[in-house]
Image (cartoon, rainbow, N blue to C red; front, side, top):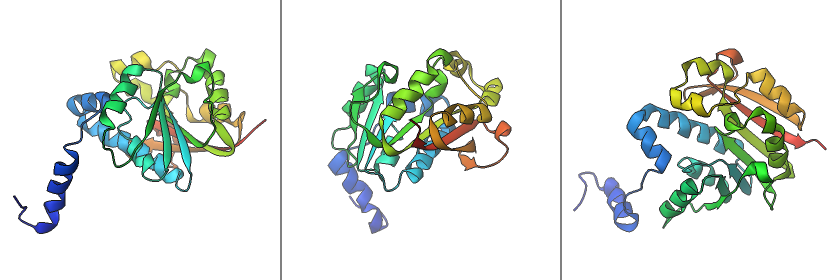
Length: 224
């Protein structure tokens, strides 16, 4: 069997060698319920990957099914993806077989302590808003302690202003959303440089932060 245009035979070769790729648990649900949201999620991971080019190791906190983590793995040779939920980590490991972009996985609760090893970079998407405000400083301290001295943190979360448009399922888990300035001021207590970006749908920009549905922080320079 051959494709009409021969250059597309590579598609058949990949299927024969690796089979068909599977969605993860969460990406499968998103593809079923709201397909366009998968574009937004992958765009967030693309932004992270662009920020981490040149780093040798990266830690992901709260990877869920890690469907977008491969975008970071394309530019960072050593990636450890962690989550507090073993259901998601087991799903990741199940799908890792024969991956051309191998990623390590581990069950870990960042509120219980930092990672044993320190990383050149840490990234965390759609996690901070699930951390109760009483524990947010423990979260930041343990994240900081998981980074090397010259490490970088990329953190993404929905804005407080976006919550009037959030779905019931999102609202149930979002216990600690913040406005952009509040988020930046908090992380400035722990890092010398904190850069705030806005995001709407799949577009990251530096526009008016109160109109952003999503916020990104890029943090460097760990404070003692």
